[in-house]
Length: 181
Image (tube, rainbow, N blue to C red; front, side, top):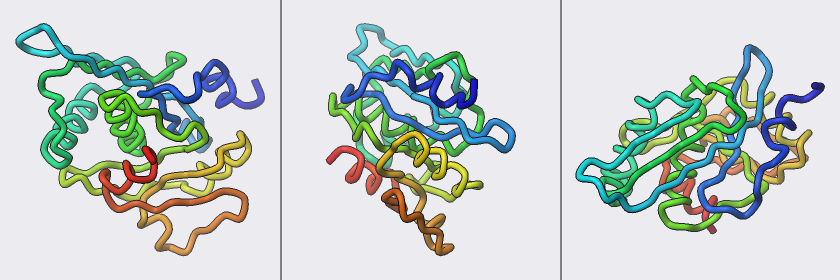
């Protein structure tokens, strides 16, 4: 296949709560992947935390950040997070997309269907810069995305692109304001 991103996004439903698109690097090539989250009230004393294709430790950390820094009551919710298409995502640049997918499902509000989400999330709820931002943005342009929500630090370096809106964010809270408008 000429473009693996098309494979991973081919059956993506638009306007659905809990679904976002992130950019992961496969070697030196960016691949856009849908991340889905489903958050639902738990009937168990210890809610389920299930992941597929993602590092369960990173997802647990993101859930803790959302609970502590954003005040979300996720401790009573079953949480399922999946990287669609059987792909395995290991890099921290997926953190912000995972966080937004979880919040989107929890609040039952769909994020922008033409947004790409990129950024590492720190324990204070800050969004940290990622590598190879130019190639990630170029891949989003090729596939018709209209916005990229990315770390503000990646824009401070002076990076701009004429064909797509770049929104720099410094925190998860700020990213939510743009993604869930």
